[in-house]
Image (cartoon, rainbow, N blue to C red; front, side):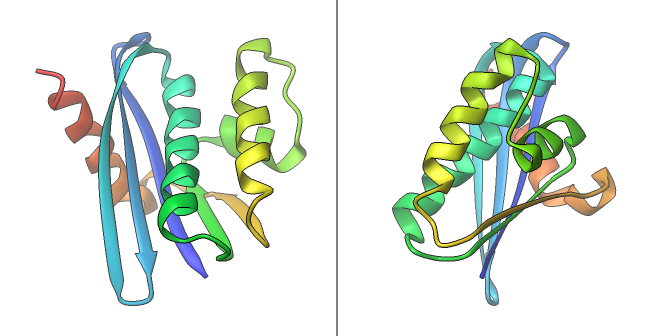
Length: 130
């Protein structure tokens, strides 16, 4: 099973964004900092999950994925498979489409303090804009 920690961050809300993805595969880990354009913090959280899925699709196809995020909005929307927010509906469709290519995809909300690595990577991505 692949453990994927994701976090989205913005400098202001809305503001320049960053996605942080920290992947644990056994004893190995992989880190990604992806600069994002200006967006809301919630949008950045969804983008981080999408980028995490795309990375897994490329490097870990056919694996069981266990995602962790500190975004209750994203985790709840994905778990329920539904969101009233029209802006988030396209993110949800993309996540459902990519995640359906894996045998199992789980997502779990975790407290911020347990998402340290992904948070640090998301903030680094914002700094990379400069």
